[in-house]
Image 1: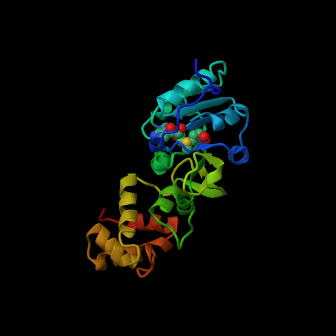
Image 2: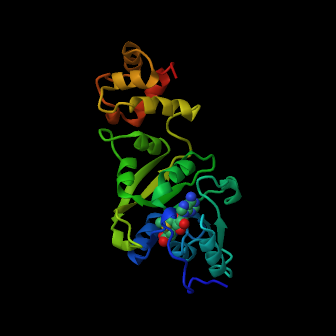
Image 3: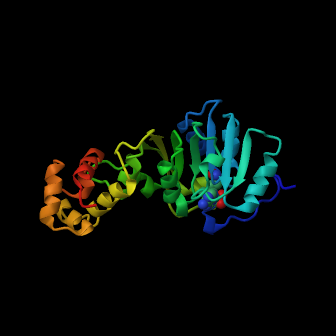
Length: 270
Ligand code: SAM
């Protein structure tokens, strides 16, 4: 039987296996999640179990998802006698959340995410019907900064994060905190997820079509990028912007979430 003490398989670069080895960083992640004994935590990418062990010491239930069958097997064996921990072999981008956490049960998501799939995994859980209340995730520093950007520096990712929750950077983490060391710096981000998105998105595709159009030529005035992105004359995009109370000469990155929301209301073309 494999245990965490026996020699682990070599890290697979293709799965983003940069394992956390720094106990201080682990403590920052665990503290940022404000864990309570009755919390249910979903961990994504449990790897060799470094974070899983810290979670299991603090909360009543940990469901750890890992895509790598070899690591899943080792971790299941290691937590064999620990009923609070369940290890599931699955791809976090498509796993059925309701099979992991009972419908309606609040949960937190904690993860040191693989760089290659960090954005799709976060998007998946933010957009899900059964969302976590809180997400504490480690990911590439640049992506973290973009998610948390303020008007003036916004992008599609900032909008797509901030309609679903309030993100903040907890700390940045140097490559030496991992084994093997990545080439880039990471950040821990906490997102306090709203029960419902703050923009009434019915359907979300329409909202994101407007946002994508707005950012289609981000250096241009929003009047022009909306026209290009939506395939309408600039005179029409100008009317939309006036109706939403937005100066058509501004650039997409300066708009607040509320302004995107108003623009959605005036967008009859999408
Ligand atoms: N939690 C461990 C730690 O902190 O040391 C491992 C973190 S490592 C950066 C990312 C982990 O996610 C790896 O174990 C990798 O195999 C796993 N992984 C990669 N892609 C995944 C996916 N799509 N779904 C679930 N796990 C994935």
